[in-house]
Image (cartoon, rainbow, N blue to C red; front, side):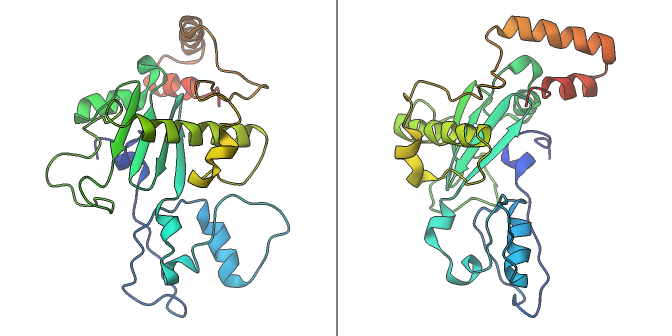
Length: 231
């Protein structure tokens, strides 16, 4: 629980329980990544309703029956303040933008988890499925960033694809098969929203945040809230 309010698995992953005896048998287990944004898509699918507008999320109605393999490698995206993370299957890439205002950085230090600027985790350990019961070392304690440059490059590309799409108001989710589409830009070039770019000078940004905290409240909650106001 020490990693709540952070981008570690203890902060972003929770079990979901569904009670629908007419359609879902008791005791059924689906151990693949889904998101809360999938709820509306799934409910509409069960109700036989096709929305007249684009929505986030995907329905897992059919997936829980056929156990679609591609779904297990589905990419999910997370964001808190300036920090971002993307998980595709077993691998998760976590980027801490500014340690001074990062709750993820602070929680990682307290919990003994890797909290470098760039982190790569294998959430499956030595298996091919997500580790749900950690009795030994936490899967996010070891940073594989320097050991797996190809995987890092793939997840960075997927993250750029995601940022590019949301900045354009698109609802489709970037996945591993979108690598070519995402590679329209140089691998070292970050995709930015032209309407609101990240500050070029981190020190100037920090000074502004300090001023805002001084003016509107000096408690830690205000600081965390203000540090996330960019998004």
